[in-house]
Length: 115
Length: 114
Image (tube, rainbow over all chains, first blue to last red; front, top):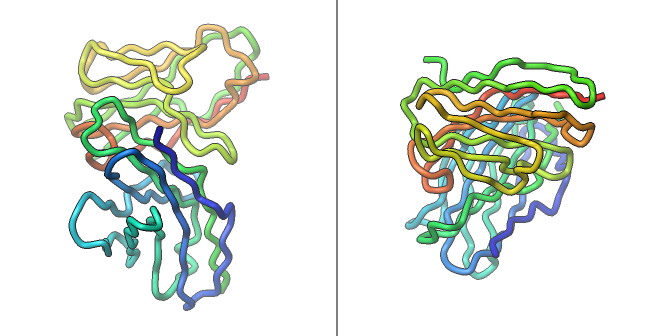
């Protein structure tokens, strides 16, 4: 069975500092991995995805994520946080080549950037 | 380009009442989904559809029904609302199975059952 975990309910960062939002996953085979962001009173928006290839994936709004197979992690990062990055972030995973598997979302991490 | 549109945005129901949530997408996507979002639980899949006229159960289908009579529309019905169905409901669509490609989400419907 596949699963995804976001160990931190909330992450607080000062503007201008680097940020990391953690995600770990468990699948039987190889994963597709995604990050989505949800701004207040809005639906989820796609940020980035890892399918295959380079372990460092770049996405929207200056975000990037690093796929680490040995640690089964896909942490979201940004070198310099902005107040406008404050939102709810979801990691998601789906097992590749498994038609029966569905995408699973983590419980979400609320990112708060203070000025 | 509107993307994914959900109606209504807010609703309060009394226990036992029924209602239908409408989702419309203008991207010609085959796949559509209904999720519920509850605090600390992320998104849970209720039902989904892989094309016009087809529907399938997700993770938490009990108490809900769906229909996909037209490719662009996906309806979620609650026949007899219960307080446990108080949640924020999101519709999404994608070109192929979500998890292979990115999905596009509506703004959500906040439903309260009293």
